[in-house]
Length: 94
Image 1 (spheres, rainbow, N blue to C red):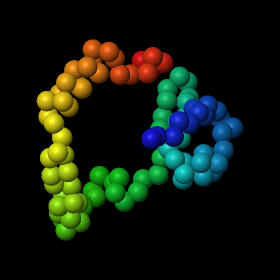
Image 2: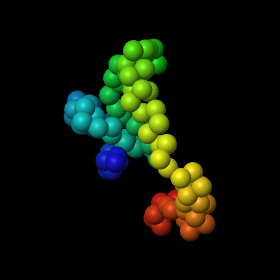
Image 3: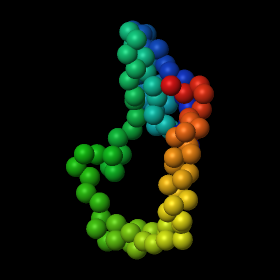
């Protein structure tokens, strides 16, 4: 589950070092002139040039193959349509 964080209003007096320290733990939402920005760490895996280890990917696939084999697909589909009909979003979410 994602951590909900308050939005930090950025002014000319904002402390960049403090914001970066806060962003080490989890992404920080920044607001300036009504525009929201997301400040977060860029880890190696998030980098655009990241290439996954093929052997590790194969191991993960082997571990998950067939994990849904025991599901009744008709029941899953029924559940999806029922959630669409009743509305599965919390009432306070747009």
